[in-house]
Image (cartoon, rainbow, N blue to C red):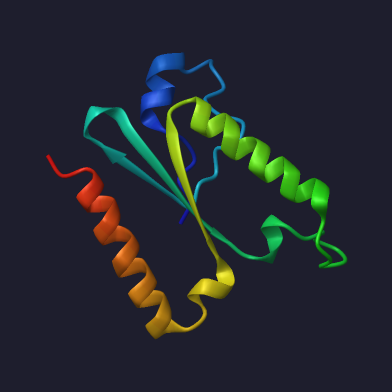
Length: 108
């Protein structure tokens, strides 16, 4: 499932505005105080040419440029490489630790 827009940004720009160049986010967490956290799960399609499956530096550069733009607009962006999530047990430990730390960061 993909989220196609951030309702905060849509509200600020109105229906005619283009909210963000990169509307497809794997996950968007909307926390109090307009805290917006983007979580991306990156497979090969994020950094490789779709035809050759070879790493594409230009594709990667475009992705990280968009990350910078999101950060400048107030989003926190966290990426997980697909290889980190292949082993279910290791992925569970990794994600439990990540979300525990993230929750602690925003505890009142």
